[in-house]
Amino acid sequence: MPSTPDFGPLDVSDVTVGAMLRTGIALRRALRDCGSLEDAAGSVVRYFHEHCVDVHTGARSCALVRFYKTHPFGSLEPALQTLVARDLGQPAPDPALRCLTLLGTAGDEPSWNSRHTSRAHRVIPLPSAEIVRAAPMIARLLEDLGVDLESITRKNEAPSRAGEARTYDVFHVEDALDSPAIPAQTDFVIPYAIRSVVGFGGMLRSGELFAVVLFSRAHIPVTSAHRFRTLALDIRSALFPLDDTRTWSA
Image 1 (cartoon, helix red, strand yellow):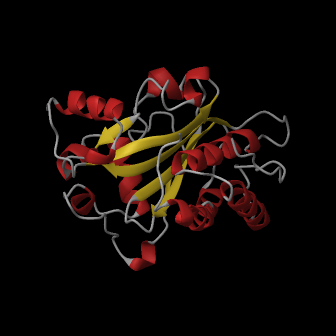
Image 2 (cartoon, one colour; image 1 turned 120 degrees about the horizontal axis):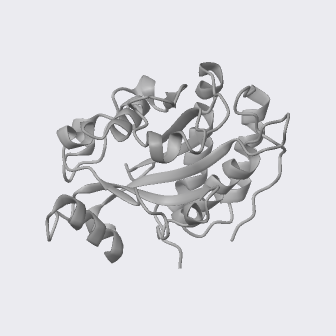
């Protein structure tokens, strides 16, 4: 399992340009030795879970960090295909159906530290723009990143962007409590004191989308959230050598 260089804590409530630069360097170094996209996703989420801390108390700021990537249904592992078929109520979904798939997860609960043991949101089918819009957090995440919902749900077509000027945007919910964009209020937001959520990502060379989502107990203001945009570039560049190789760990 690749290790992540220690560049000190990242204060999500007051993110500086220097902190983003150091984090970008650390992530690129960590991903350099990864053998698959899943290994890389694991390194990314562990870095944020371990290094995002309250500088005053030393406590970890992020209760949960997740890394998602879109995949055609036909390329998924059999277990994930079974979950998609069950969710859609279809015995044999179209192989070209795009699915937002959990590749990496790190969090406070033991079950949150493996995609295999996560109880929910391991794979999210995207069969149509209408169905995606019925899932408020997924719809908001994709739209805030700049992804056109009609395109990402169209079979046999790579996701398109709303425009080149929006290459790497940020999903940000400053106040998670009672936000319609974060639906798991009683099961997650309230018991784990989630204050803010930030997500960032972009398109890989293959045309598939990746997204990293941080669920933070610390307040993340708009100025700090927007600075995560630069990390999408760092991660995307580091993932380029892996995009044409295997996705899943051996």
